[in-house]
Each structure stands twice: as structure tokens, then as C-alpha cells.
Image (tube, rainbow, N blue to C red; front, top):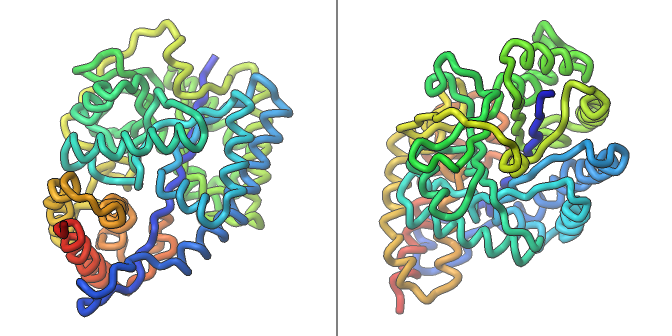
Length: 396
């Protein structure tokens, strides 16, 4: 029987307002409250609330069969608390079923893991505290920002107590091997790795509403055939499907049929004797010998390359990244809680995504709600904010 792991990632940043050079050291209000309120409410109404309601109904309809997991960035949790607390309540209701696992993640959907251990584990620690305070959970599985992973990052997470890590089944890392097996970190072999089957994920994320695709329209029945063909060809136990939760209702609105698709898909998998749902932590109870996977450089779920160029691939991003983490020592010494929180929020992947030229000029789901006319404008705005945060961190 093949095990299917459904995992959804939720990450919405605190978006920056237009912050000009002459605002530096004059105005410390960096975040666009109107946009953050509007987008949180919009996503709650289109995606989080109706999708959570659907998942709860399916869990109750298929008891002990349907399971799933979520990683919810701390920035998203804080947005929910501020602007739509009913979303928090709906997740608590899901967790109470015992069929939903909340994995660890970073506090602000941070890319700190690309810099050093101390900045990354600070994000992990703050997220653990927030998950405990909000949902009463202590995660044992971890889904890093955009499933970024390397041997070193896996070792850090093992030191932090995590035993299962979700990441990408990147071809240049796996070679001839299948993402449908259980793997482990080469330095901490008790740290298990679940690898995303990205082609199956992309059939929904990128191609669900693509009229030029030869499999359009995608139905649950077709997708079940894809799963069966994948399982048969790999002869392996796991099919790991990780998506952005906003795929349901925002990237594809209700009128595209995305809700009905997932409802039918989950129903058919639950009734299929060849498949069973698991959550990431379930692999810890399985008597399996994982294969070792070596990933000497960071991988992610970005594009065909599965690398980190989406966030630190051009000179603008690299300059912003380097200047940001030069402030780590100031963060550790500062007693200004507002400035420290701002520094943490500036680590969010979305801010660096807005500076990317990788997808510039093309529609891409990760760039929804883009507010900058160019990567250069995103960089200038970000650096103005960062310079003021530096001043605030330096003040006694």
C-alpha cells in the first residue's frame, strides 16, 4: 500500500509600505497596515476558511483515513490574530480531530538557513514558542521556507530535536533514485527526509487551469491514474505532495472547480485500497531502513533548477541579504522589541522574491500581490527600511 502525505504551506509576510529615503530616522512605521489587513481578509475568505471547512468535513466523513499536515509561518499566525482570528479557531478545530499535524517552520518565512545556524535556529525557536502558545503543539517534523534544505541544514534541525524534514525531490540530487522512498541525513541518520514529488504537485499548481495542457481539464479520476502510474513505476512506498495552501481558492478561485477537485480527489483516495494517508510524523513509527541522501548545497522547490536563485540569485538580492545579516549582532544586543521584530520580518522570503529578476515579466504564482514596478524599486524600498531598522537597533 502506498502512503500519501498531503502537506500545505501557509506563508504571508507583513508587506512593506512605500518607505522613502527621507523617512529614515524620522518614521519607524514600515508595514502597510491597509494592505496587510486587506490581503489577510481576502485570503481568509477565499482560501483559509472555506478550505479548512472542506478539510474538516472530509476528516469527519472519512474517520481514521484522511490525514494531512500544515506548516504555518509565524508571520501568518500573527496576521490571523490581528485581522481574522476566526482562521486561528478553524485550525484549532482541525488539530482537535487528531488527523492534522502542524510541522515546525520559521517564524517569518525566513531564509536565514541560507546564512548561518544561529540566525536560523532563532527563527525556529520563536516559531516553536508561537505554535505552543497558539495551538498547544510541539512539532517533531519540519518544513523549512520553500522546503529549502541541505545536509548542513538537516544537521542543524537534528540538533534542535527534529526527526522528520520535508524537502524537494530534486533531480540533480537524486539522480536515478526516486523521491518516493524514505531518506535520511548523512550526518544525523535518525533524521528522516520526505521528498516532494514535484511533477505531481506541478500538475495542480501550474497546470490545473492550463487549457493548452494535453490533460486539461484535470479531474480527480485522471489524477488518481497519475498516482497509480507513479506508484507502479517507482515501486516505492511514499507519494509526498506539498503545495501552497493558497492554491485552493486564491491561485485558483472557486469558479475554476479547485474545491470540487480536491474534495473528489481526497474522497477517491480515501476509498482506494491501494493508498492510505499519513502525516510526516507517522514515518517514525514505520520499521523502514532509509537510504542516505547527500545534498551538499541548498535545494528548494523553486523552478526547474530547484535552487535558491529566486531569493539570492542577483546582485540586488545578495546585497540586501548580506546587509540584513550583518545586523545579527545588533539584534542580539538590542533591547528594542519593535526593531528586533522588524529585523526578523525583513528575513521573509517574499521580500527577496520581489527583488528577483528570475520571473520578472512573467506571471508566477509566488509573485501574487506584487506591489513594485521592478526588482530595483523593491530593493530600494527594502534597503531604506533596513537602514532605519539598523539605526533603531543601535540605539540604547
